Image: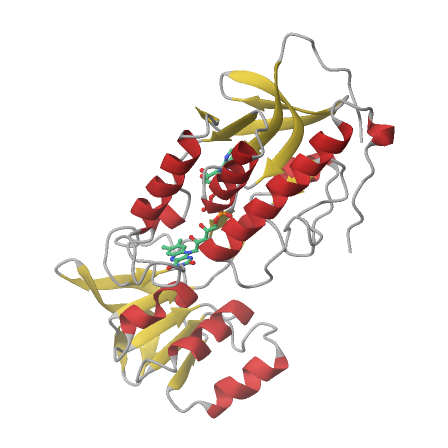
Length: 328
Ligand SMILES: Cc1cc2nc3c(=O)[nH]c(=O)nc-3n(C[C@H](O)[C@H](O)[C@H](O)COP(=O)(O)OP(=O)(O)OC[C@H]3O[C@@H](n4cnc5c(N)ncnc54)[C@H](O)[C@@H]3O)c2cc1C
């Protein structure tokens, strides 16, 4: 890891948080309450949670609009005087006592860094994908909305298989449309369960070529080849499970350890192998497959607490006095 001397004219913070999603806002809430000088940098307010029309699995709310939930988090954080820059960070350099972060339009120094930039979901790239009701990227989040309806999962990896299993508990029929001839490396137990569930119907060696609609809602899928005598499969919901890429490039460039999925590897307190660099939310491996608003928020709180520990114990002490956390 190359460590460069930092310029003296760069604005400095105790904690710089990258992201504006649930992980980042929870980190900012705790960081602000610990009275750390805190700056959040992120291009889009609210992250993925703000795009969820209904969250029914966030404690304290029977149902809440995702944008509203994020707006409340913002209100809480704004009261604490946490500053926000609406921009995308493009580079992080390791310098004396922390990091210099470059973003569109500026550079700042963070004594500690909380990396909460989420992940990029792979899309089908088909017309209607962004606008139709009935297209989802999260079975854990949206399965209850489709109870009693026929749905399809697109994808053949472990997450697709697990999504189908979850949906099969609420939906009378779940098609799994996958271009491969066999599911791609699902866990053995998932594969056994899927073969036992009579309402899960694999449609293998097949691609989806078009989303069919009625008014503003999904009505079916056009397939690359006939299934059951037709190229049109009538479904009211489709769950796109073709993978997601953690936005971990900047962390990788800094020498932060990633797992085989490209997720930032964290310990119990959200520490990484790089001292003063913490990660939280969907970009890291902290919650395994349970990538949800509640887990992201919990990790943000832990990351800020770890940052506080570093600042309160070591302040501006040199790196040699900053005891690195061990990664499990
Ligand atoms: C449609 C949908 C519905 C969902 N429904 C639910 C639900 O009902 N319940 C539930 O618990 N979970 C739900 N989820 C999952 C949940 O939204 C995520 O697990 C959660 O948002 C993860 O939070 P995060 O802060 O880690 O990442 P994100 O919310 O993805 O936020 C990442 C943030 O980082 C910012 N960023 C990206 N690149 C940079 C950069 N270079 N520099 C600075 N900032 C950057 C982004 O702009 C964004 O603000 C849903 C997800 C989707 C897509």
